[in-house]
Image 1 (cartoon, rainbow, N blue to C red):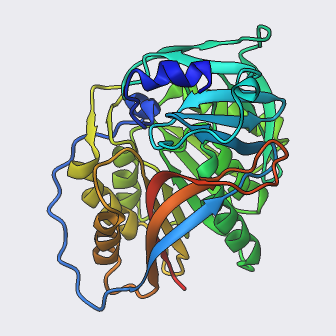
Image 2 (image 1 turned 120 degrees about the vertical axis):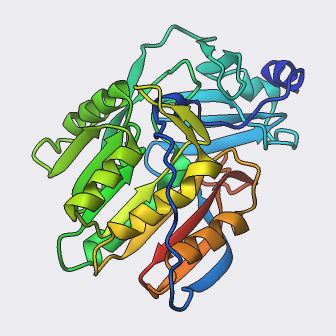
Length: 341
C-alpha cells in the first residue's frame, strides 16, 4: 500500500464539494405548482463516463485515494468511493508532484504537500479546447470537476448543431470552465456564482482562453435570488446547467439545504426555460439519495413539457499512466438531465 494510502485509510474520508460554503442559496419557501400533462419519457439508469480530455486523466485509484494527471502534474487526493486496492505500485504513487493532506471532512480545510519540489499556486490547463488555470486550493479542489466533461461535451455539441444562437445559464458556475466551453461553441452565456473569488478566477480563465469578447455575463449573486428576478423579468434560456452544493452559506448569511430547496429551484428553472429550450441539467454531489429521487423530481418538474429525462451517475474511467489504458470506473455524482429530444 502506498504510504499516503496507509495514512488515508486510518480516517474515513467524505466525498464532498467544500466550495459549497460560497455557493449557497437563500432559504425560500415556495408552494410548488401542481403541473398537468404527461410526464416526459425516461431513460435510466444511464452511466455517463469520462475517460479524460485535454490535460486531464485519472491514472489510478484505491484505498480511499485517486492519482490524477492535470497537465504536467500528478496529484493525489482523497476519494472515499475508491474502495479497492490500487493497481499501480507504491513507487509510482510516491512520484506524485502534489498530495492533499489534512482535514478532508465535508467542511474541513487541509493543505497540499509537494514531495518533489515546491510548485506555484496556479498552472495552465486545457479541456475541450478551453484554457484555464488550475489552482491548489485549501479545499483539495483544483478548479475543475472533470467528471462534468460528459455534460460539457453534450452542451458543446448541442450548441454547435443548433443552427441558432443559444442562451445558456450556468448556476453555481464556480471557475467558469463550463461557461467558457459554451461560449467557445457559440452560445450567449450567463454565469452565476455567489463567491467573488470564484468569479475572479473565472474572469482570469476567460482571458487565458482568449474569450474576452465572448458574450458572457459574470454575475456574483445568490443563485435563487437571481433566478427569481429573472422569472419576474421574463428572461428565458435554452440550456440551464445547475450544480448546487449539498449545504452552503451565502455571502449575506443565506442558508442552502439541497433537499429543502432543490424542488423550488428546479421549478423556477423550468419557468425561465425558453419555448425552444433544449436542456436542463442537474448534478448532485455527496447526498444520501438514489438518482431515482432526482429523476422523479426532474420528471415532475418538466411534466407537460415533452422531451425525455435521463438519470444515473457520472463516472471517470481510469486511463493508466499513458492516458489510454482503460481501468476501473470511479463514481463521482448523481445526475438528471431533461432534453427536448
